[in-house]
Length: 481
Picture (spheres, rainbow, N blue to C red):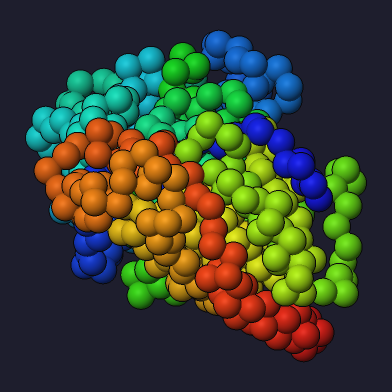
């Protein structure tokens, strides 16, 4: 819900803040995707004669495709010959953020045991590969909670299919930190976008096979999922049918936190292309008029992100900051997103705005909704400097935003009242955090700390932001032409 005044107290989960305690950004070698079966366009699906044995879920009751129904599909065009295949299975386990495995030959999935079976002349030796398809490979605690998927070869007959697909499978997990908007983008949809555009041919159909695809998650992101695949989702935990695929990819490629490395993309896609992808999805069939946003404001519009009380990093003088923004020349909309805020509403608001300001936290992931050239101010509390840069500073620059970082002083932090200016927590956050676990060390800076901005100090940052946003607004007709 968008509010002009008195923002509510509903919250959003902590964002990038569950990242590993020691920040590591690895510049990985260029990824060379293995060969895959080329695309075969499909006609309308037919129901299986054997029936669908999948267990019904809440999402399927509301009309969201969740289970298999395809048994036979006609070809619109003759299938092209696939490229030569040297191996039935290839796995790349050299990356810091992720593992990825590809099955290059026909395979059968048994979702009840999360196993892909292969019986093919190229698979001459008994092989077993296991993978946890979630791109936080370095984080043992998180990965231990991701369901393991198995690939096995055998000279013995493999199970008979209930459902036959002519499109390859793409397998990943929606577990981990799902429920946190930062991680849903950074560990989920950005890696999914990278993988689809790296592994598969342009416009190739894929069938999404997802572990831990909870009903609420599917409802929230169904427009993005349908933008990637026109086929019904196969949820490993809900399905009992045996599925045949011409090939499969297990795992998602990650370039880092909210990152797309254009040099490593075969088609040079970037965060701007991801923004276009989001826009195409969220604008599709959007008949919700509950959010009224002027199309041509008289003054630059800034979205002031609010955090609920009790969540940590709350802006204590929100009303005064809003008034200061208005004095500088902005049209201000206070926005406090919640896990249930419709994403198309958030996108419509932020994409039409000229600037966004907020204290470091998951809600700043909405910078992905800003147009290139818009202005973004991140307010950085004590002790969060490195994580603010890793999660949002780098992404803002890569997105082409006018990025302004405002690091607060000790006098602007509520921690000063509790610990005093001579305490190491205040004087040397880096030294205080050294050797501590993420949860114990950062709890103080993320949960206990609130912010009261020095308006005189902050004003010069706001003036800079206004001039950049005003120039951006004045050039809108040129960009549209």
